[in-house]
Image (tube, rainbow, N blue to C red; front, top):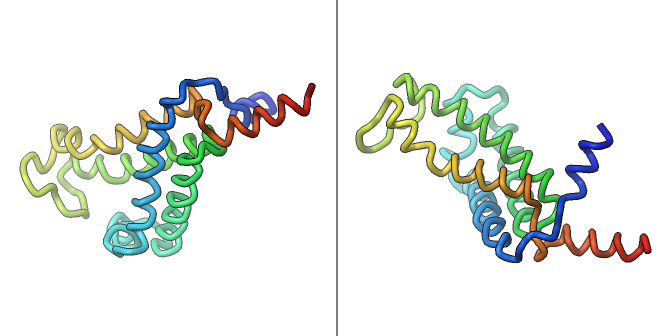
Length: 163
């Protein structure tokens, strides 16, 4: 367990400065999607209610706060691996709770506005942003936040004090 914790909390920070572009993309999307869950009830509580989640108001607000805070953390490159892992798990739950019913044509959510509206092609079309977020977070989980990050500043300070 100690090795896994160390791996999560001590990511490589020597990645190229361009990694910040991926952090801006993923962090920005999670940040504004978290805000949208508060601003538009159909994106938060209403969606969680339709999907049949227990305590939809509490869960929707928890997820929204985590998206806002986690999005900011990705933008800053702080605890990048932990945040990326959380978002991968969250996105997998989102995919499984929405796309299986879309595939089967039984989704309680509004159908896509244009065909395909059910089946594998509907799922592949509707999953595109989920897939992009999962893969971006998976990259950040493995590669770390890059040199332009708070994780790097913390690691650099740690290296200096260990000398």
